[in-house]
Image 1: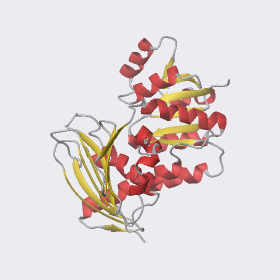
Image 2 (image 1 turned 90 degrees about the horizontal axis):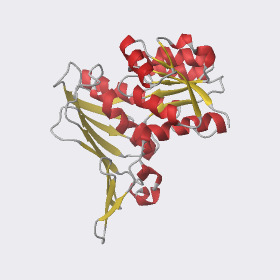
Image 3 (image 1 turned 90 degrees about the vertical axis):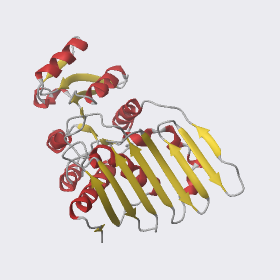
Length: 312
């Protein structure tokens, strides 16, 4: 069986885990780890004896078929653009780019190339989303969703706001579940621990009449990740931290279903290589990534202006 020759670009907090997964999978052959930091390169070279460790993707571009981009978001566009121009497949961590305009440029560049681009929206990999029979009836009609994602301050990802760091997961989950994008977004927030937004509440309205309230915080007193769906059929709550779905329907007692904890990064990488080798459907494609970036921009615009963002 052929293997995908890949480079992992960015070996920091998340990148080192991506490198570890890529080193273990049967469908990947890691050609190089790429990082501009001499200290990081030294650490990767010490951990993975014999692995080529370089400062720039240009040093190994002619030796690879794909790149896994795990750099700070501000570098995503430049690196993904370079990979696509050199006809390489791309797995880019979320968000795809810093701006919607840059994401559109990548989509246009990809249009005439037969390449795989996958975006790392890992919350889609929870096993529960594959068990649609447990929650499908709570998606119909003009229902409501309430999503909460809290965490105590951990001192990481302070170069970006909590919308790009955390809320993006939930905006993407709403797109996946409802298969539509909002027509109105309103947001309020606070800058608590950093010079960026650390606590944000956003309200979204959809063409179908559905509404969602999403609250995220990285300066909280507890950790919580939950998705609650409400419609005429009842209430369904998914606890993403404890791998548990609870649902309440008329005339029935509350039902509880547990699901398996999985390695999301491993699932994402397996899917990426399968898409390349077997022409399998991309797990999260460039259109999904583009939609998430646009919603991020709209939330941030509402935060900065104090006004709702209404789409035509």
